[in-house]
Length: 248
Image 1 (cartoon, rainbow, N blue to C red):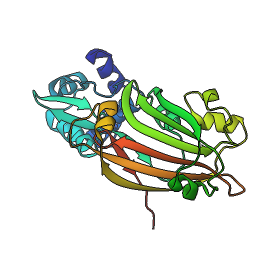
Image 2: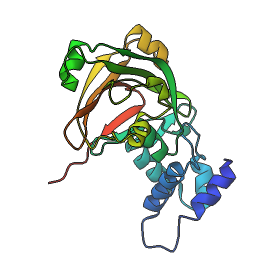
Image 3: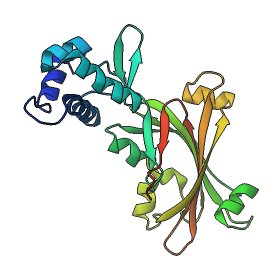
């Protein structure tokens, strides 16, 4: 979208006659533009001078609004006096959602590149995580997950084969498949830790040497407490933030 079209969108959300501080109005307007993909991730926003002139605001007001959004992680300042929409993604740890749901809620198109899908005997760690004996077969699904074609995470999901007799039948979303077959999990236990990326993981995620990954392990349960899924997802730490809301 052109700067002029962006300014017109923002102008409809900023009222000089309102009693609310103008920097807060502008900050909220910019956040709305990002949420609605008027300003896409990685896009350069109009300059402070253009925002000031186009919206009839002082440079101090514009700078304060931008500074607040930079502090919140929504905008990034770059060399050459450019300010861009942050490419970082946020995931709440308070609700159980799929990767596809997370991306679509942010106006991004989720993608999936299959690395492997197989039926095999479970490893000792998978036996413990799924609560199954060693003779029971599992389906192991390994995928590269993308958002607007950008590599975001490597996901390895393991399920008892009785829930997924044909791994080739799964499309881009595992949860859509489980929901359609009456095996949608209703609760989960998960833990998170940071681990260095292997050479293969750096290649798949297109990250530099020394990158750390945020590794999430999740066990998902059905309403009758059967364990339906054990998933390990390795997220790019340079683009993904996990958010927890705390109340007292």
